Image 1 (cartoon, rainbow, N blue to C red):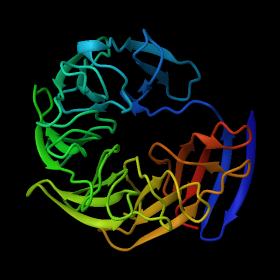
Image 2: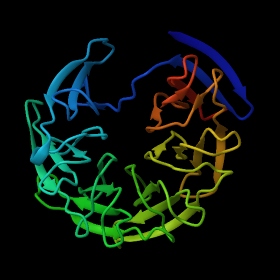
Image 3: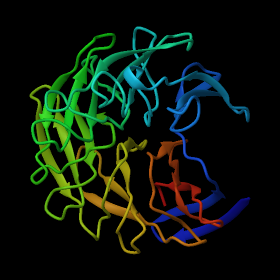
Image 4: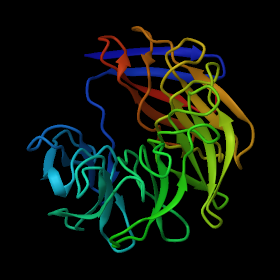
Length: 314
């Protein structure tokens, strides 16, 4: 069912576009095809699918096999300079704690390259990998590490191991990171979904040259909490992500950091109900100079979520 409604949210223009049921994250493999994961389906452990750009037909690429081969990917595949794609699986692998998979450039098959083991290198990655300026992938695990509050790791494309770069401690820097990264000014920006002062999560920057993490903001009821998604960068350099809960209405927020890691603001509070989405999950997706799109699993005309349009300039 289509549900169109325009809302003037004072500083930012927010349009509720479509009530829907399915949430997906996609990555361009070629100019004409998008690829992405499904959490369910296949032979029971999720799958990778492809959709032609502008098309309406979903075709399976491969099934995740479960067990030692990994299962349940929440992260879009990212193309490396070697032409192959890399993603994470949240469970399965040698220790059943998830891993990193490599997908052939022709999308015909995949190989589990790394198994997470818990204390040594983390456990249960949910976010996508990010290819930083130094040629390495960086990512997070929700659990594991020295304190079992998650880790930041680096990975060289094609390798068979990761380097643990940071252990989250649950208080000073949060816990349970579920998103990936973006890079600005030689630093990575990320989120922790829980922990810190109010047990609501944390926004941070990570210097991959020195492997140091610096705080930006402790999430709290007014700013929104439980940030599970990666930041995206708008054309003007500002960075945006979503918080799943709290905010002015209790249904989550859009969170902004000014270019260069400057001031923070909350440009939108979700309103819930049929007039707006609730509890956003997944990253915002830039579409044009000022327009981004996102999805919520709740709210909307049917209560099953919505796709929304967000204008960063008004």
